[in-house]
Length: 178
Image 1 (spheres, rainbow, N blue to C red):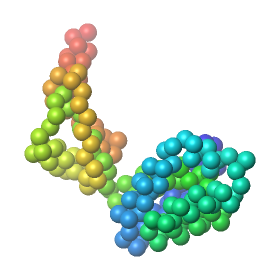
Image 2: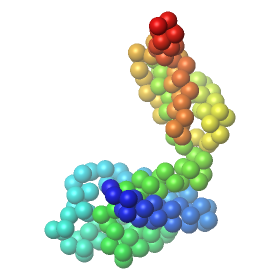
Image 3: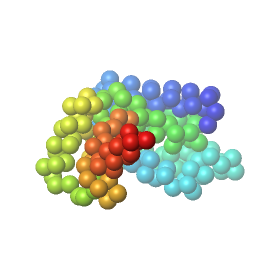
Image 4: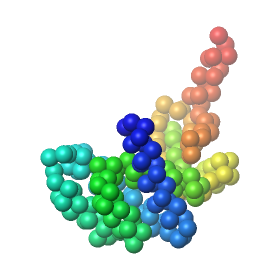
């Protein structure tokens, strides 16, 4: 995507996020965006919206399907997208909305990678640790298992990382011995 399209995408996303924050509708807009992105992750849908061979009315018909289950704020936003014929930018705009919502609300997904499955109490403690250390609020807790860590965990949220894995400690020791 070129700089002009990126700026356009950011402008649309920022406007929706600003309205959502102002109207205390961030949760509803987040849910709407996630639902739309689930559909837009299909490459056929993305090609349909980007195709010049498909008429604007057909593209509008697809976008209007999103309006059937969306909040009023999302419906109004999608109407603006249709009026300005920006259907082909819908997916990057929605992805940017998620980023902006996270930043504005300081609410992020917390990802933990561990060698073994974590208990519920361990998940709660790690979520609390991430919220405190990274100064954020948990949206979702995502757990990954990687036996190559040997032990410990890798905690990620908002582009920040806490790595206490034995694998990384062994790599650090190896580097120090050189």
